[in-house]
Image (cartoon, rainbow, N blue to C red; front, top):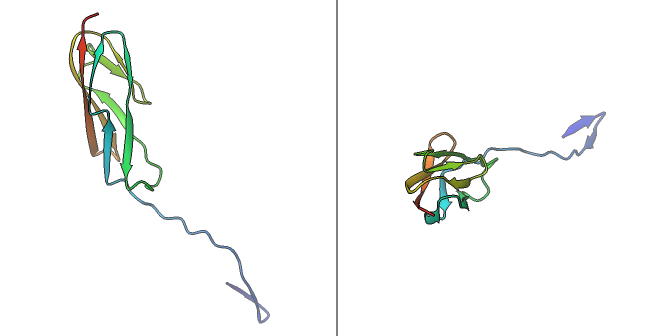
Length: 102
């Protein structure tokens, strides 16, 4: 509130606050793909109204599958690979992909 010469002037105030991510779920949790195919991974955040939720993606073996910054997995060669999504630098979940030969 602002008081000017005894007159109250009501102003609109927006309060911003940070709601941290406390958990993530990577979907699907498992998948089987033929080498050369792709799989789009998605992530849900808890709480659902978390502030600016972001996830970083990594692969356990780039010779089996790669993953883009958007969670698009491209399979490369037969084997098993774990794709990990990480939020806030520490909160993780995984998807295990079995890659078969064409």
